[in-house]
Length: 79
Figure 1 (tube, rainbow, N blue to C red):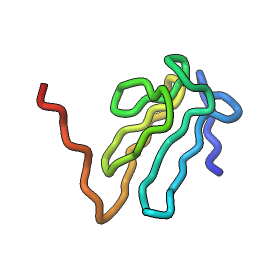
Figure 2 (tube, rainbow, N blue to C red):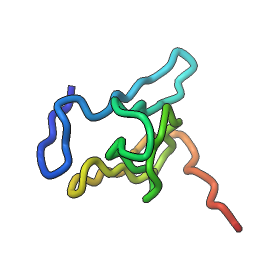
Figure 3 (spheres, rainbow, N blue to C red):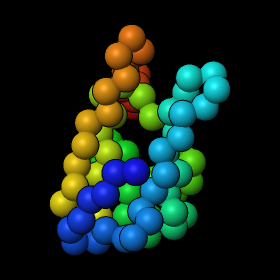
């Protein structure tokens, strides 16, 4: 368990899961637009895969960079 505090943080904010095949996912405790979880600046609405160098934000003040050595970062959208 990792405990963080600050504005907009809930008692159980999200769960990070590593699957048997080695993929990592974040699952917000409160699904939808108001989850308070953001991946690379976008709200996380449901279970989402994490990739190397992703930026996670919880609440309004807590930001983390995901480091998964030996894996590739997310491909940027070229829209």
